[in-house]
Amino acid sequence: MSADQRLLERIWKAVAAIPPGRVASYGGIARRAGLPRRARLVGHALKVAPRSLDLPWHRVLNARGAISFPAGSAAHAEQRRRLAQEGVRFRNGRVDLAVNGTDVADLDELLWRPRPP
DNA sequence: TGTATGACCCTGA
DNA sequence: CTCAGGGCCATAC
Image (cartoon, rainbow, N blue to C red; front, side):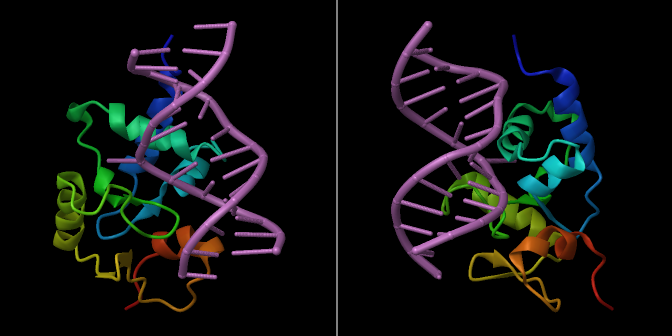
């Protein structure tokens, strides 16, 4: 049997809800989907997501605010290109939060919140 | 049935 | 900052 389709759909929905120009972490998406501690499943869900869903997969980063694909890979470049197009800035391979407080524990909240004026 | 792998995360040292 | 260790678990072989 494959993974419960309904769980995957909940994850896809959470990803689809990430606003343009903002990002979220795998763990954050998992929590948002009601699946705490299931970050790996989020990665899997994105990998098997139907192209037809046209998900904003590029807005999902790891807990350090970095792209999880190997640097130098085509996927890494593509993700970075898409984010750049949305105005997401990077610094030293990590998202430049440009907001007060970079506490990793609150990373998702910070990343998720609207940008400061 | 068992082992390995991976678009991950968190805590503690 | 890095590193190790444990958690998590669907898939592939």
